[in-house]
Image (cartoon, rainbow, N blue to C red; front, side, top):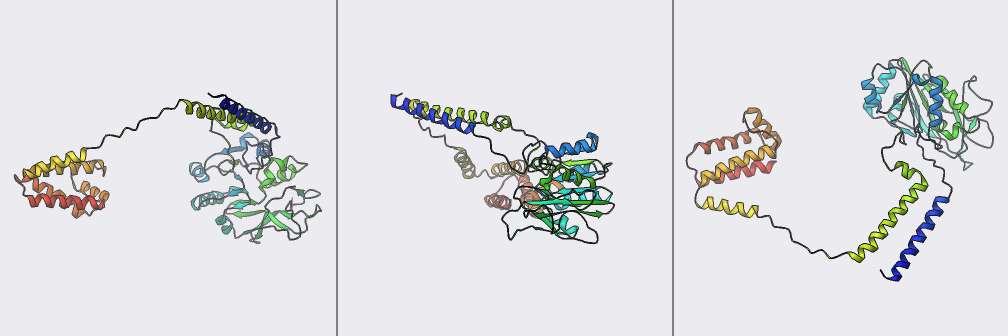
Length: 403
């Protein structure tokens, strides 16, 4: 290796080392990803609220659900409790929503805290959601509180970050009970415009609670000042005798990790060391490979002569007027086509087998019977004419053309 190349490699490695050190030395930025996973200790993880509920309802009263609700309720239809959903968005499909609502009707509770709630569920309850918009202020920090005087604090709780603030703009006033309200912060800890963000509706023998401020269950909100009191009082509307079914399926973040690189890449120092090794390997391969690489001769692949050989043999049979032998070969090849392409056994060519062949090949049953009858007819003859062989070829071509 030339001296100039060595100097160039040393400069690159030194530059990468300095950049890696500077990057690894910077304070790690706060991760505001809305995970809502029980294992995450980031601001919008639910590690704190999960353990709060676990302590309040004890470990026997809390069950983790890692399946889709439809599958879980199909296998545990008789289980009773509170199905607890917390995420940025909760979107059930039609069958899943019907399964959940049928379960609620039998005396259970559905609790959903999310900014986006399944529209079919909202239509079922005759409610609509809108967003709080500040016309005078740029800030969209929300104030939240509960309406029950026994659960209300001396002042509303402030979430000191600008977020999207949905509220229930239309309600079924006959059946809906407003449990909590919100308002955008306007330099005073008072709520003047009561915008419902926590409601309850009876449904059959059960009830449904909807909440549009899932940040209340995030670590950041709960561990700041005395905000945990708001989250704690939210749960006062749940029956303490019912089991909490904590959903881990509808979560933006993962509750467990299957990648073997997760621990490596989750630590910024190990991550940059890993990147540095990869870059070093690439540089080594580039410079060493460039010096030692040899040209590889191009070897043309062998040509497939099967088709030419088949044409030659068939031509010999045809010229010698061995029509009977050709017809026999065609019969065997056609049966092989049925077995290997259509995946239908040909041990017994009964009525059911004929119908299956017709269905798989996109042919009519009558056309399928015709070609097999013609095979039988030719098989019984001692000698076959050229015209009969041509007709057999046309029948097979037409049959395969439909597949």
